[in-house]
Image (cartoon, rainbow, N blue to C red; front, side, top):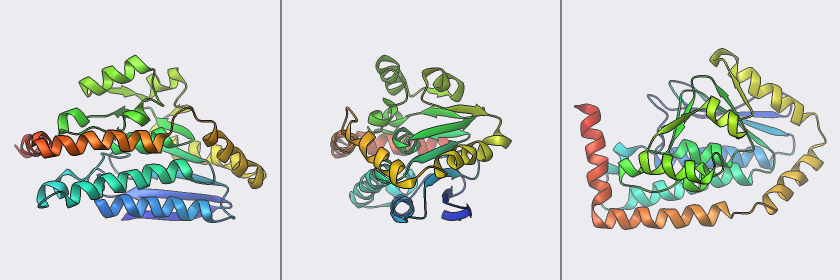
Length: 249
């Protein structure tokens, strides 16, 4: 369990997140995921990457318990840097990254999906950023790549979620399929990309990133600065502890 890379089909790297119970990643987990994506993109034999998960949902964000167990701000800074590395690895991967999403996709999961090139999802998938209820800010940069501006603000301020079907209506989710068909749907798309000349696809990925209207790296780091301010004020610690107390209560 953890971050597992496999290549069961020619030219397609499958990166799987398997961290029970909810795929909430520790600081090390985010860096491990970043390295797995980076290694895949650096391998000339890889033409496409599928990012998927096992378990109840795609991703539940950062491991809040790890942050609460830690003294000072080392774990918080580590989580910030780890998320930035993982989200950036998906965006900067030299080949297209297809996110295959099932169940819940929250917080850091939105950072991964928002920076992916293509998203396919199961019909039980939901997407949201509950950061304001955890005393944090972040991933608005990536949520804004999935929904229109006013909906993004509504979802952000309320911590509500949207379904895969709703995102399909906006064009940010390419396909919605039954849960049992999700992996095959992602692989089918990856095969279509992988059979193209990888020199052209790699150039296309770089070109598309180059014409992106927003610098996702800088935008996300800007958000993270406010998260750190909220921690200095004590608001974040109170919100995280309330979340854990309510969850265990």
